[in-house]
Image (cartoon, rainbow, N blue to C red; front, side, top):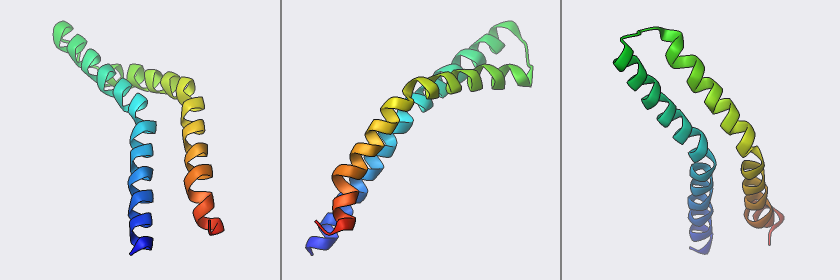
Length: 89
């Protein structure tokens, strides 16, 4: 019973960490998509690259800026949670 609780608690925390890590990139993709869509609707420009390139650029910039946060969060999760489980502690 204790092993099941530990497994599900670790799984829940891992899923929460994945949500936290992906949140900045997904937020920028959503906001960028809405802004580009609004711009296209207002100007009647229906160019496919207009939707892709600005969103991709914003995602790359946010990914680059948030890499430190992502790395620290994952390393902390592994060191605090997974490594002790694997080591048997």
